[in-house]
Amino acid sequence: MYNEKSKQSLKLFIVLSRATKVINEQVNEYIYESGLNPTEFAVLELLYHKGPQPLQQIGNKILMASGSITYVVDKLEKKNLLVRKANEKDRRVIHAEITDQGRVFIDEIFPQHEENIHQLMDVLSEEEKETVITLIRKLGVSIKDLS
Image (cartoon, rainbow, N blue to C red; front, side, top):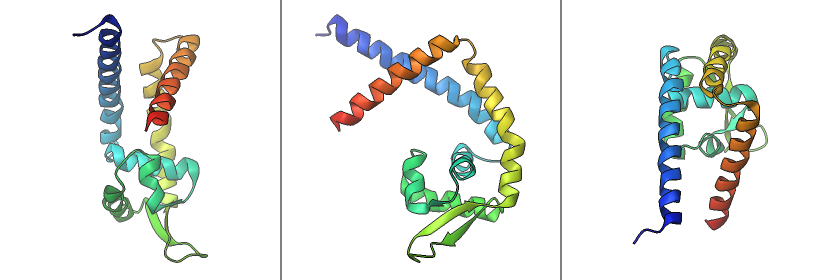
């Protein structure tokens, strides 16, 4: 029924899933301590690093269902961490933009977030990290090509 190749693939899937789960749990612990949930943090980080974004595109960029973005943006707007702005050329397009308060907030918490991730990944050498990046990217691209 199962051949060795499919057993190996299943093992890889399980190892990747478990590693992702424990890494996310560790990273999310710090995010929750900052007063945000992981989705709010992802939206704010996106705006911080990439600038204003159309609301319709945020979901794809942070790998989240677009229907939930409005709720997350509402919460961040109430915290004065972002604002909505209509596009000057097409008023139907609304952008989310980080506020000065949001920028200060991310400036304060992002260095520790980055350090936490580094500590989690530091078990691997730089060469091993590059190998893992290359292999997982290859896997992701091949799966995307199948879709």
